[in-house]
Image (cartoon, rainbow, N blue to C red; front, side, top):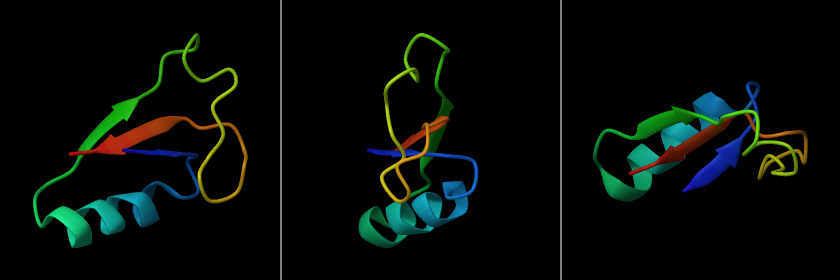
Length: 52
């Protein structure tokens, strides 16, 4: 699972597809979940959780 901001959501989707060769699941984080969760690529606040 990859936590990412809006800027890096496409990158995270591509990585999940490349690694798992299946359609990824894109979830928008609720406001109480994203308060301290950083993006894995830039350390901005994460808005999405991309996984399989």
